[in-house]
Image (cartoon, rainbow, N blue to C red; front, side):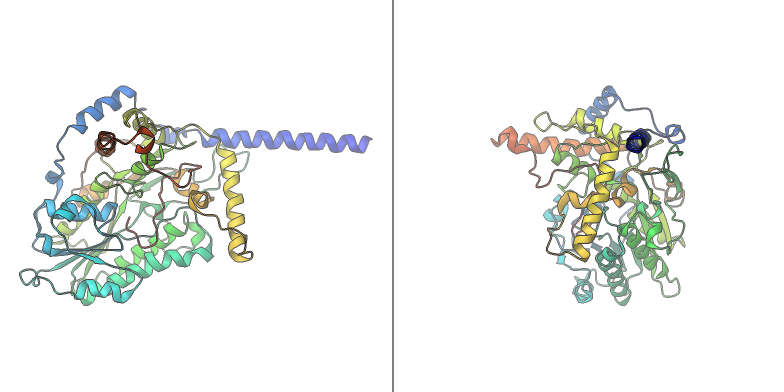
Length: 487
């Protein structure tokens, strides 16, 4: 009996200790560390949000004033139908480039207004097929443009934040590295003299273990300050990166920068967009804001986590400024991180509040708070099941959709408090861009106008919100893009 009693007491002690530990982890993950709180802006109030939305929603889109002047060049935009590539094409036309001197290379046909209205030439392209890529360059240009120097903007990426296992890496490498290599090789052969790739600030993110030691206040690397989003080692092992996506993007960026050659007049560089990208003007789930709106929100425990997003317009601007500056400065082989023009980072909670306050009343959006620890534990279970199914038991059903994203690597991208310094882009490129409040207002304005149009067409309230196949279980901040689809 004494032995049984001792076992019971030991079990109770372990249970209490485990409960205390998990509560400690949950509280820690929902707090803003003091060093981050010191640099974040004051929480956005409903009044501030409404004032900003009313100010910017009626404002004409005068982004042209930020753009560098028209260049006498030809352009190929890989991923020109995506969130970033789409805006690059729009901005090229907006500043006066002849549409026939611009080409869109993408798996998806263009949808944006200027690209469609001006019949910008479109080439359906699989970047993993070297021959498919080469055809974009080999097709004859109109005689009035054939002699012009050539710029290539490469914005294509396969994005999936939930994966970190080495056996999943090939699918990322095929698109993000080999696809980039195909474009670089074809561009060099075609006499291109400017090649700029869209990289990612995620290459600087250090992985974090959210089930950290009980004597620590926060997980290691829970707070990261990053100048220009520089990683410790561009060629480090997979384990040093946030996941397969970040690892492959680092390799792709290095490939492009290493190809820079002043002697042969092939100048290259990279832009690292902030975390994460959003953008109005197109119903694209790769825009984090559009993804939230179409889903009507989601349960989240990230309200106190700091972030610095960047609008796709600002990312496009950075590409165009870099290209223009290359014409007069020796800037080849460099890289620039860019975020929105905000003096201080804000939090997911501010973003959630903005969308809740401004979204159309017939498409309400909510972000109820959920527990952190249960989601983290579930993510490890999903990853273990997926690995076993993929490697040994293929007859079992595969985890798909948003559930497949809910794996530990996801939190390396979404849970870490990272503050980026993009002063290098501001100093060397003259980068400014618009602020987040303006960018968000334009995005929600587009959404609300679309809702009003559908209601005017007689659709019921229940059919206005976008249909979503999978219910998102956790805020991830990095939407999934199919293979070959542009960011």
